[in-house]
Image (cartoon, rainbow, N blue to C red; front, side, top):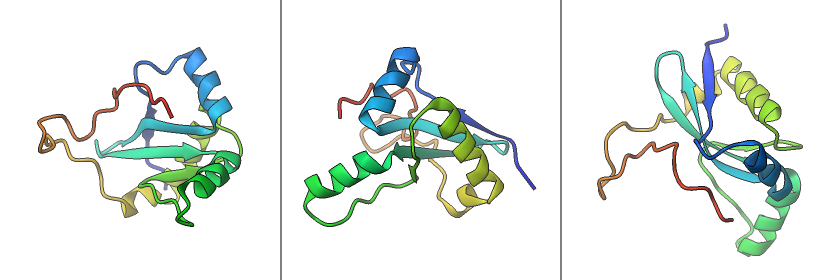
Length: 118
């Protein structure tokens, strides 16, 4: 049974940002919000960028909470992937973001973080 969810993009995510994300093959800053209000941070990679980052890290692995690898990073592809993951119950296996402030006083689940420069 599918649960309603919403993929929330940062305020700065516009047409230009979508083009840049597709070109870079990496995107961090979106949050999946389920119908029960729980929120989950997600990070998207395409296979080419993932391979480049694996090589650049030099450790032989790359670990990100909420990592989703897609053939291309477009808004429709990211929305479709999170819908399927929601249908499959994936997000219920993850820890939701906390609504409590982090130790430094900033919200732990800020989806409006600054645009990445990666």
